[in-house]
Length: 205
Image 1 (cartoon, rainbow, N blue to C red):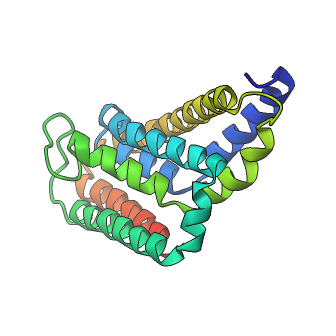
Image 2 (image 1 turned 180 degrees about the vertical axis):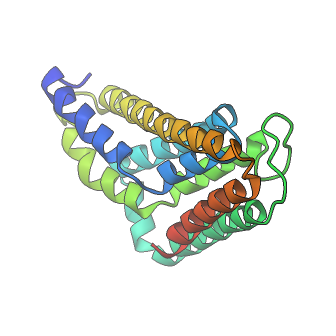
């Protein structure tokens, strides 16, 4: 268990990192607007699992393998970015509002949403950079590493989930605003454009 003094610094530091606009937060806002907050929770599940894996990898040294084979990491980023871009294009050209409750397409099914969150989290260079640079200094080598890592990773997951929920709720509010005038096509275009941007961001960052 980390010291309380360490936690007092760790919690606000990683909350600030999480709340900063980025790929995962933009994705949460986009899905909150297009499929609703409840279904966006599935994407959040995949994202927090991905973030947890990145955090653990940053501590145990697996990140060095990724850095030694950048070509493999780059290909994975391109695949993930192309997938998100494809979903964004489908959303952009949709003529009707996506059904929040009954949608079962690859992009908005539960497994599809979990995949979006997971891929975005583990292929995000910003996430790796923050975990590699910020997380290890909070680990004390004089205490069992496993217990400390479990607590810190749990707090990171909670922080990520809370911030994504804030962004998704904002997306839902925007959706309600656009629906007042029945601007379904505009809503689809905005959500689709944001998702395409996330895909390009992921592929070329």
